[in-house]
Length: 92
Ligand code: SF4
Image (cartoon, rainbow, N blue to C red; front, top):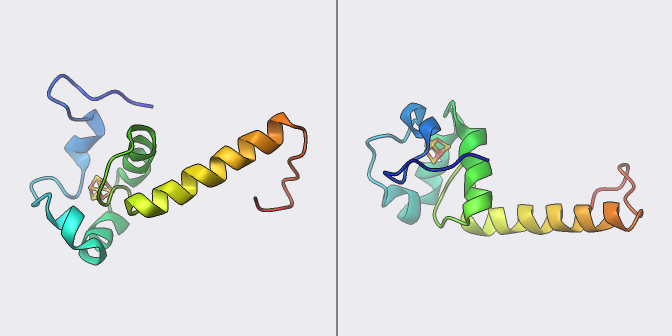
């Protein structure tokens, strides 16, 4: 997990492919935003922080709704592991 600087940006954002682009693109045009993310060198870092900080819009090549699904799946997996019920052969 990384922390944003005092300016509210993450250090990995200096390498972001979307740097200098209109941020509205990442809210209004998901398809085009995802195209940009596909080849972004900091896609993993971006996704990780978007999952942690619950940002809206496209981050790390995913929409808010897609990230909610990822978080839900992770939550279930952790729950199953804690209960000793997790079977890695089964996809939760
Ligand atoms: S993954 Fe997408 S939203 Fe994240 S920094 Fe890269 S281009 Fe921007």
